[in-house]
Amino acid sequence: MLWFRRQPETAASGGDSEAVVALPMGAAMDADIFRSKFSVLLGLFDENGGVDFYLEALGAKSQLFQELLGPGSIEALNRDGIENLLETVMPARKRLGTVLAQMEADRLAVAVRDLLYGRGGLEARMQGFMEALPADADEKSTRKTRRAGWDFAAELLHFRAPQRYPLMTRWVWDPSTLSGAVRELLPGGDSRTDIGLGGEPGLYEAARVWVAQQMAEEGVYREPQFTVDLFLAHAYADYMRAMSSGMGLMNADFGDRADPLEPVRKLLGIDGPRRGGGSRVKKVTLH
Image (cartoon, rainbow, N blue to C red; front, top):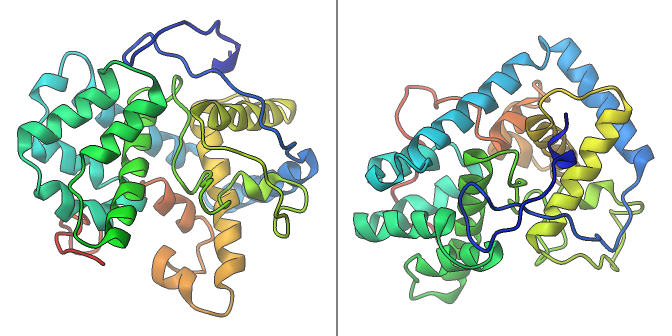
């Protein structure tokens, strides 16, 4: 059964009883665009060994998050554990390594616990996590840190409880830049300037439910909490290819053009360790 058919529970704080309720999106996504992109994605899986590797990798990532962030283990969370999680979050690991190193270990662990299990609404807790990160003297750098903090918070929530929380990273949807995979599913998305979408968690849930419903209509019911992620990463990779065409940016940021699924793996943090081993969490300050 798809997760969105379960009866939502009512809760005012995080943990195992909180549910994100889908909100009206205010902009209709296009089923024809979905079918076109979904057909391409299925073809890529067929040509590259199937979807099993991707579902297993996402399941393993989620298992790591659950083991380190579950109710029975969250109190023992330390800096090494948080860095292990950050290693799998591509949008955040380049910027947050140095930032998190500036925080006392106890303060950092408390920020994560408050995000996952604290009082208040989900969006407020995500905002609180961002604001707990050290500010930089440079305002622009601080804004970038906060944005990376949102991505890290989004993945901490989603991969700890993938059925409960949609993936709310900026590459899924960024209301500040009106970009992301969601835009790629809107009719005329490339040229539209009237996208009236906010950034509430319920919007991400609405997009997730819509994609899962489209997949179900195509006969795909398997692990929608992860197959939706795969589809959205594929849709955003299409956008990145279009934006970087002829500029070499796709190679620099997402790998070899000869492997069209590598950007999907990188976006979802399941691309494996870098060549030669070692952490990919950056330990230098980036401005």
